[in-house]
Amino acid sequence: MSDELEGFRNETREWLENNCPEGAREPGFIPWGSSKIELSPDTRLWLERMADKGWTVPTWPEKYGGAGLSKSEYLVVQEEMQRIGARPPLTGRGVNYIGPTILEFGTDQQKVKWLPRFARGDGGWCMGYSEPAAGSDLANLQMKAVDEGDVYRLNGMKIWTSDGVYGDWIFCLVRTDPDKPKHEGISLVLVNMDQPGVRVQPIRLVSGNSPFCETFFEDAFAHKDDLIGEVNHGWSVGKRLLQYERSVHGGVNTSGAQVKQEGPSLVNIARQYMGVHNNQIADGAFRDRLLRLEMNSHSYRLTQRRVIAETQASAPALATSILKVKGAEFTKERAEVQQHAMGMRGFAWEDDSFTPDENETNKNWLTTRAVSIYGGTSEIQKNIIAKRVLGLPD
Image (cartoon, rainbow, N blue to C red; front, top):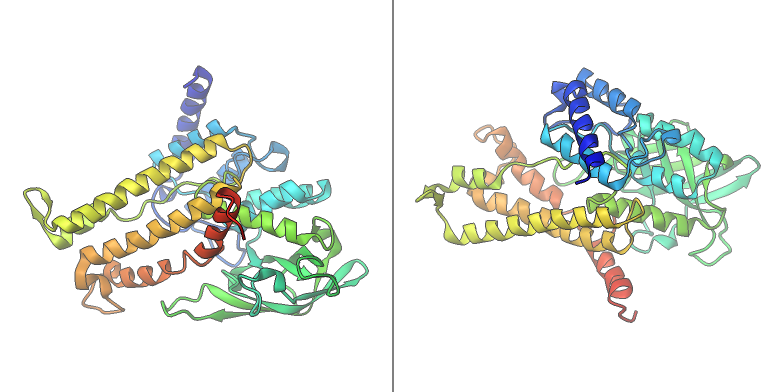
């Protein structure tokens, strides 16, 4: 490590020690900008201090609210935050999805208007892509945007809107020209969700949660100044945004202050529920399964670091699909291994005879079933890998 980078590490360590509140040095809620969610005092203070430092979006230019850090400096910040257990100060679709998309495709006016707001966590963002008849076949979307001078009039609906009930803004792919082929005539617009023409309805899941919503647009409006990219060319912009999304799921997006939040130790869980023999987890077959998972997870983290270090852009292109597929597999395997270790105690469901952690285990397993679906299914990612990495025919 160079003397200059070592000096940066020392400065970073000192600043974090002096400025990260104790309440932000433990697992907990990470704000994503929603004005409808009240933050704890330490969480609010941590967000404000990191935003002032430019470290909510460390690699963005300083004039847009970032710190202009290099990839090497970015990794140092992440390592030093993880060393003291600091939570990311800000996450979500603002800094991770639409922010870098505007940085790449937006006009100078749009960058000045929106990027500093994203960096401060000023407004929570939702994603308006999927529709009832346009999921994997996204280009089949039908939500209409009719030109009415300075604005577009919006009519239609989106589905699976994550955090829709808490959203302040939503970026939407809309059809601005119904007469063009389906991959054409699509545009990307930013829409204020706090207007009479936008209605949100939660979708209750089998896990008991309602993170997804249906979002209805009934004569809602979007300003033309908030059209990202050229009109009728939103398909290319929208696909690039998906690369940013998949990079987040793959752990290689460098727009936000990404810090891995450690889950429960599977070794400790197995020791607690399965017992120990000769200072080893008693079940030999389970030990082998756990060892393979931990080795694969470690290799995965090393690959993430290599991709971040080697990629010039904020979101790698082809590596995103590879990492998303493998990350989804490891996430699902981790949940299954935890349930296996806990036995029947891992299948509780709102039962007072079980601990709170045990009651959450089964819900967590259900939630992990979605990781190979959202952000682009594993099947779609494998098609991308086959076509663009391996060069296989369609």
